[in-house]
Length: 193
Image (cartoon, rainbow, N blue to C red):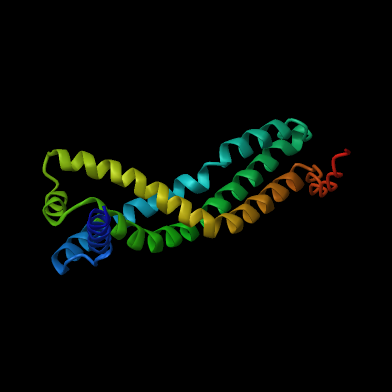
């Protein structure tokens, strides 16, 4: 029994060591090439998607509130709101693009090294019609999720603050009072026995 456990432990140690080993120089070069091919397009599309995701709801609320503005001021107010939205997008898409571009390299390299061997990476670079392209497509979806989570963990608070500032600016342009900051909830009392 002990020799069996020792054998399993040795096999596990070897497997773990292999999984943690750095890729060969040839495999690393293939991974770097794939990352370079995808980095710009992925950064562009993810940044635009993340920044624009909350805007439809904000715009819808703004358009509804615009009806409360005197008719003679609506057009000017709508144009000012549109300018603020455009400014928000123009400032924050490049900010996120930079964060995403920096996160793609290490995140993609680790994922590609884990999921693909050197032969498969050669096929991906050549991008022939094969089952490998489907496998890579699935990995790309996971990569985007991983990068988005990493970027939002770092950039989310900054972006959230900027979005709140945009909401306040739009509310002022509509002549509305911004919603008061949420009051801290009182501490729950201890349950009675």
